[in-house]
Length: 195
Length: 195
Image (cartoon, rainbow over all chains, first blue to last red; front, side, top):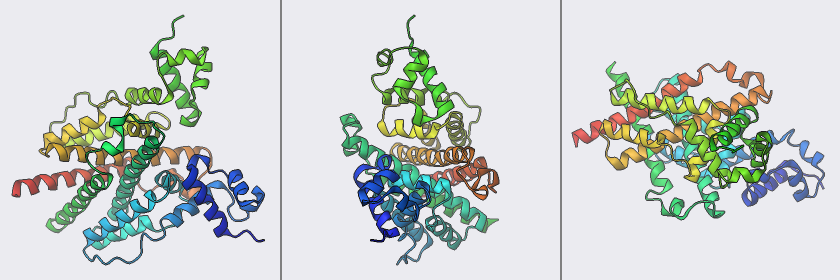
């Protein structure tokens, strides 16, 4: 039977969700699919390409249409979608960060953030930098959230360091960070108008 | 001869800088120091504690006195010190992020950022959240910078994806992100005054 690209991707995501990024190897994936490792390389020339494809699949719904019309609500909604998409898979943020660093992912999550900044009225070059800033913040916070959940489930955190005892939830923390960022963009717009 | 804590820490940092975080194991460290692995555990009960101690050493100068007196210049200067400290060691950002997630590091980098926000006039609870936001951004950007430098030195990036061809330097990118964050804090202060 023909091994399809979607089968390889699905098998990889299943290993990711159950065992984590550290256990996702081409050899293990081949075994789980009942094929020789060579069969995988027909679809993905190397592991980095496979990881980028997983990132693209994780983030493929981020830029879907939104009801919100105000730029600030749209920017916040896109940012939440990225965080939610990363949180939906074990080690999702770490995986996305690696694919983003390698410039192999082709999803439009970052461009969607940049477009929302352009729609707000920020110049194009600033919008690119603002999108990077927001993406780095999302990756930084989400990686921490996922690391701590993993550590806690392995009993590697002391009781008072457990995320269960956090005064502020990850989502509330994210909403605050996001509002600082949006306020920063807004003050740039005002400054541009007053110039 | 007595194996001192500082020897273990120095040996660990030497392995980190030369081979990276993935190759820093207790066994390898013991071999490089010419001792049995058991000798390390007298100083560091486990690898996580050792990594936290490295993070603390990396960041121990972050809160040293500053000439700048305005809160925005101080906040930016502290943030730059954190980034510089992380960039000074291979995989420094990834290491610090892991120690921060585990809540094992005891350095005051995060508290220094929070104190600078309090000095700006932000309420205490908001200052804590703002410090987290900024720290997540610093970690997210710095991890990306270090990953790309590593990938590039291994020839794992295509030529046009190399950091050498970036239009905006990592420092200029960081300055922009930092200015958005500082503007966000400033707009919160104005909002509080107008309430």
